[in-house]
Each structure stands twice: as C-alpha cells, then as structure tokens.
Length: 268
Image 1: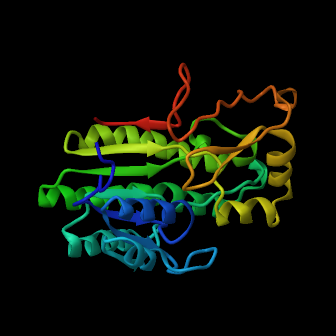
Image 2: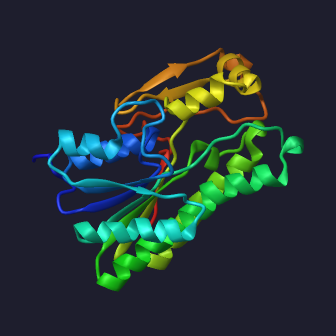
C-alpha cells in the first residue's frame, strides 16, 4: 500500500506555519498532497531561508499561500480560514501557533499570563471555531489538530502558566471532539521539547535557569524534525527531583507497550 499523497484533496490551514514545528508540518502535509495556507505573524522563517509557502510551491505539486495571522485576533483566524476557500475550503485545521515560557510562579505578572493564554489557548479555541464553522456551513467533514505539550500532561514548577495553557488545550480537545463528532475529528498532539529556533532562543538566550534545569538536572529529549527518533540527553535518574514523575520516552513510530502515548486522540 502506497503512503504517498495521503492528503490529496485536503486543504490545511496551519497557524505558526512559517517556522519551527508549523513549518515542518506544512512541508510534510504538502509532500503528502495537501494544499496549505501558512498563517503566521511573519512570512520569513525564524531561522532564515525560503518562506514555507514558497518552498511548498518549489518542491511539491501542492498549492500554498501565506496569510498574515495573529492568533490572538479572532478576525485574523477567520480570514485565514476564508483564504482556504480559494482551494476548495479547509478540511484540516492545525492550531500550532504558540509560545513557551519559563518563569517563577510568584514573578509571573498579569501581562505575562494573559500573553500566554491569548496565544496558546484563545488562539486554539477560535482557530478551531473558525475552521469548524467553515466545515459545517459547507457540509465538509474534516479534522482539527491542536498542539498541546507534555507540559499539558504533567506540571513543572518553572512553567505554571505554560502548563495551564497547554493543559487547557488538552481538555478543550476532548470537549471539542464530543461537540463536533462525528463529522469533524479533533485530536491533540503533546510534543516534548523540540529542536526549533524558538526552543533554542528560549534555552540559550537569557534563560539561565531554564538552561540549567534542562541540561543539568532533568532527563530530557529533543525532537529533531523531520526525523523519526529522539535525541536524548539524560543525567542520572538519581538526580531526578522526587516530586516529579519519571518521564517515559517515545518515538514517532509509537510508544512502547504498557506506556501512554504522547498523542491523545479524541472523537473517532
């Protein structure tokens, strides 16, 4: 059975699609036949290079375009979905846009909190709403994919607000799956720390506490997209804080038996 063009006929809107995980998702979707709307606040990739939609046009047979989209602006999300009508209408919505933060709980301001929630949670909520409204209005079945995090599965002391935002995405996904079934499937993906320009900036530029946490204390892994395995960096398990549960590691091919997958499925 061929695994080529699995997404032929699909039209995907991918928020945060200019860089990082969103860029890799967009490129992979296009390679599998989907037309792609890259929705982001900047057209140029964070690490430089050819814009995502231009790479898709150059390297695949899929169509692609870029649309300026700030996910904290509900009108922008609806407009991004509207652009997908040029290709037949959205059938896959990937709510990928998000930011990360490592900040002591008592030093988190209202502004810090609201920024995280507006991007990581509000953006997902109304991105899903815009896509679902379009699908239902035109009688299309489809899929909504929300990017959560392993921090949406278990808490960490230096990221209370971030964990709250990603935990919210996780439970929102369950609720959306129930609300939109059976014609629209809703799923959440919970990646661990991924080797992207944003992650590099977060760890190595001004976050000495986070850098020390990740490299000296905890056992951690870095996804290196589009590879299908993890780069693991582990200290002795004896150094793992007793207050935190041990992390199990998974590959992109799936979890080992008897452990939970980082991908949580809702709907059908």
